[in-house]
Amino acid sequence: MSIQAQWNFNENNATEVLDYSGNGHTSDNTVNLSIVAGVVGYAGDFNGTAYVDFRSPFDLGGNDKLDIMANIYLDASQENIIIWKKDQYQLKVNASDKVVFTITIGASDITLTSTASVSLSTWTTVCGSYDGANMYIYIDGTEDISAAQTGNLDSSSWSISMGKNAADFLDGKIDDLEIYDTGLTSDQVSALSANPTGIKYTFAQVHNLELGDLIVTDQYTDSIKKMVVTYVDSTLILRAKPISGLMNLGSTPIRRGNITDSDRQWLMEVKIDSDEPIIRISDNISNFVDTTAESKEVIRINRLEASREGRDFLRYSLMI
Image 1 (spheres, one colour):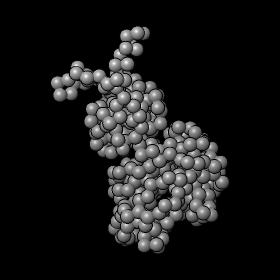
Image 2 (cartoon, helix red, strand yellow):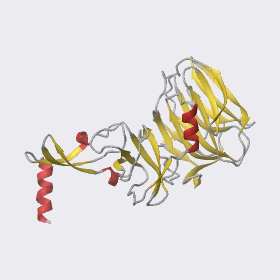
Image 3 (tube, one colour):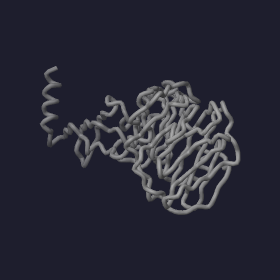
Image 4 (cartoon, helix red, strand yellow):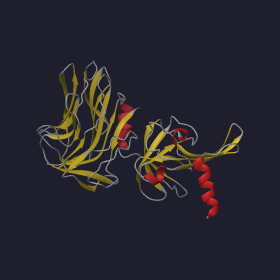
């Protein structure tokens, strides 16, 4: 799976909505948004006038795959907009409480509408998926309807809006919303629907991880298996979302940075490299686009060399 964005409101901040995909798609603007209790952690409360804008959005134009999944709670029957990117895609629940998934191909809007209705005042996962051959709608992890469709998504430079389109708003709540460019299988949709916030992990010892921590299986390589902490239940329990590959966190998960906490973006590594003992302190690992510490190192000390910053650091350390 290739996740493009994941918003879950667990930072509990009504003025900035963070992206937990590791891709840095944080909101640019929020209007009338409130934060309330969700299924796990927090949810965004959209009161019929609230919305969130992402003004520097990613463009999936040219792709023939798109998946949008959301865990929602509707307060009223109306045109409830979940997410909209003009001239590319939209996921909503219409006034008849049917899920509507729209994609734009060849300047034409292609729409698929569910047969089943979404119940009001009930947490429900809804998913619109396109795999280059068919469009699908899933409700609570179960396929509701599909239709044959081919072609690549049109490109669009428009902002992404959560909770509104050009005319309508959402009256309800969003606990989790994520976008993939994968063409998810039915099994993948079912698994994500069962764990919308993330997979629950329970440890025998204190895990020492925090919200937004980036986790890999190997501290010294840019591992293909990556996860992000999406909620911390306690010092022994947390939820984590797979970003690339499903991994076993084991008893001692390895933190590789943090999406927003600058203090937790500093890493210290001590290892043997080409028979040389190395101490490396690196900074600003905030996403999974470039997690290689070497390209971000600020101090590197080994047997044969020490940078000017490293020498100054050592002198200062000896003075105190």
